[in-house]
Image (cartoon, helix red, strand yellow):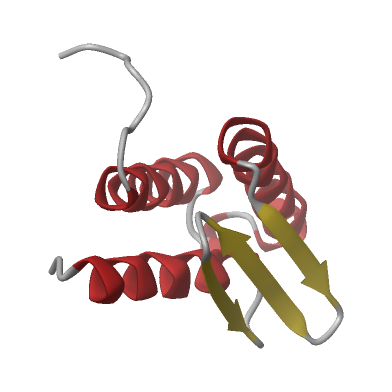
Length: 100
């Protein structure tokens, strides 16, 4: 397996999904350490946003009332934050490209 960058929308959707899964594993469960979970989660979302902004010109806007993601001509949002907005972006990308 090579580390070449994704070449199409569906490959980027797979990448985003993988980044979210890796972040979830790294951050851990809320109940394991509730006093530090939010800081770890927020740092993981910033790391994903930095990677996507730098590599794919993504625009990711977290806000007090949710988050918005725009990348590769596809936009998504969520009132639940960046993680869910990214998951919604993946779903929208797959719908647009006829993927799963």
